[in-house]
Image 1 (cartoon, rainbow, N blue to C red):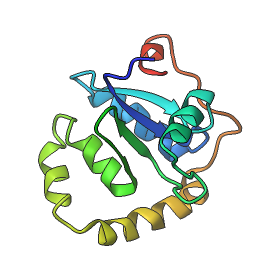
Image 2 (spheres, one colour):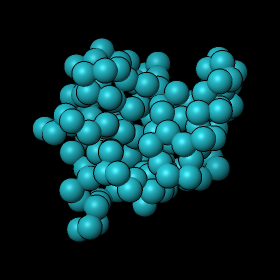
Image 3 (tube, rainbow, N blue to C red):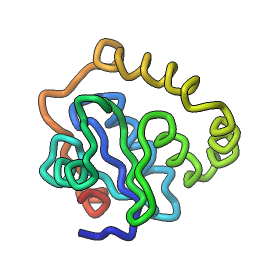
Image 4 (cartoon, rainbow, N blue to C red):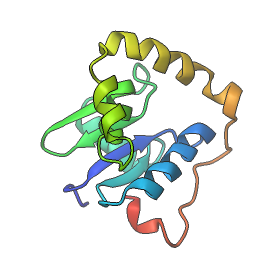
Length: 134
């Protein structure tokens, strides 16, 4: 497994999460990220290795190998810091305390299936994006 890239773990059946992954892939001009669904064996292995309880953290997770892992709004904004056009806004929003940011994040996360829908199974990467998935 290539652990030199930052790894984004996401809810593979969530339409909002899948749309976000597609957005990051489109804007990841530096090829900084790799992806795995939380439901996939690779995603499960990565959270187990880090003792992350996905029952308590219903969130996107960003793993920066050998450095740290980030959840909720911290993960989203850390990802944004690596996307052209979103670096400045991400850095500014990181100045807001995470407890405040996560109130908004949690509200969206709790309603994501109701607002955006849910797939029956994880998305299948296209031939062009397959190399980005673990």
